[in-house]
Length: 113
Image 1 (tube, rainbow, N blue to C red):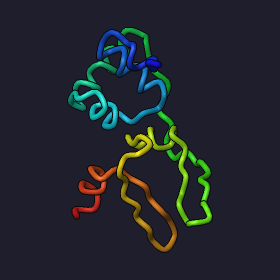
Image 2 (cartoon, rainbow, N blue to C red):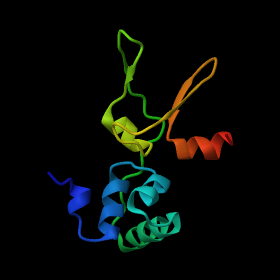
Image 3 (spheres, rainbow, N blue to C red):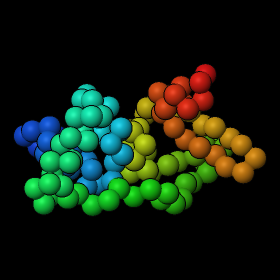
Image 4 (tube, helix red, strand yellow):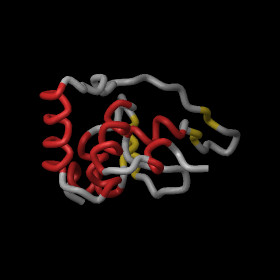
């Protein structure tokens, strides 16, 4: 079954839909194989024409489930917000006070590994 984004007829509609669901602009660009500048321009045109998507959610707190084997189960919507889908590879960064989950591409950029 096609999602709303997959059935949208133009990149602008797809960008608008993903932005309205709170997906970061950089993730939208990667998902749709367009430049981040293209995403920004499209959303700027929407803002100018009065079609302003909701502000993306940031810092959302979601629970995870720790299984008996120590595996973490994270909701599909939380994964989607950082550009991951179920089954994708991810990088887990553990510090003294927090655990970060990110895509391998983001980890390369942020951690310079």
